[in-house]
Image (tube, rainbow, N blue to C red; front, side, top):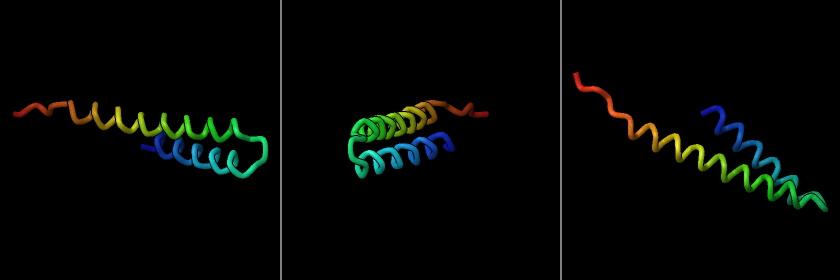
Length: 57
């Protein structure tokens, strides 16, 4: 979960810097891609956790 938070904070910072600074459109696009990676990471992690079956004793 810490990795998701770090990715989310990094993506937000890059998006803000890319949107505010003139000529930093590449930072905006990298921030959006990083945000997508963070969401996909969370999605894959939740799918893999839900597929695990606990052995019934």
